[in-house]
Length: 169
Image 1 (tube, rainbow, N blue to C red):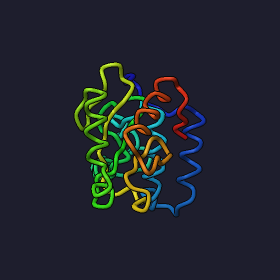
Image 2 (tube, one colour; image 1 turned 60 degrees about the vertical axis):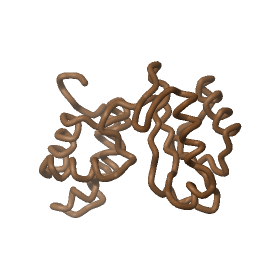
Image 3 (cartoon, rainbow, N blue to C red; image 1 turned 180 degrees about the vertical axis):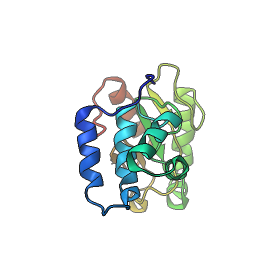
Image 4 (cartoon, rainbow, N blue to C red; image 1 turned 90 degrees about the horizontal axis):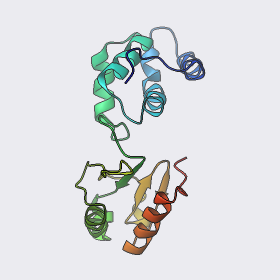
């Protein structure tokens, strides 16, 4: 992080536009979309100074930002890889083989849950229900779902990531 934390002018303009959707005194309602902007702009994760900056912009207490950022799994509290592999491990996915998918990824990338590969390319993040139970097992990568996963499909996705051919949205 740089010493001074500030959004780029275009991002700050977007933040103000989002804040304007809500009545005076209700800026906290803009917190989720502003955190998404902050995470994207400040290296893919939210450290304390970034969350403090967001709190200041929204005129709320820092603890209010921390509570939200640590509750939702889409926010990263530590640096992550370029590709965050969020593999669902809830009931339907587990029944359909998500644990085998997770084990394969752990072995293939030589990382444990929550870890990032040494090259900074991949982070494995087991997730609770991602809402695609009918297409289990599944994984979210960026804004996109990869469904009906097999070991072969996972290997193909990892290879495409390494080649820079995966759109994260």
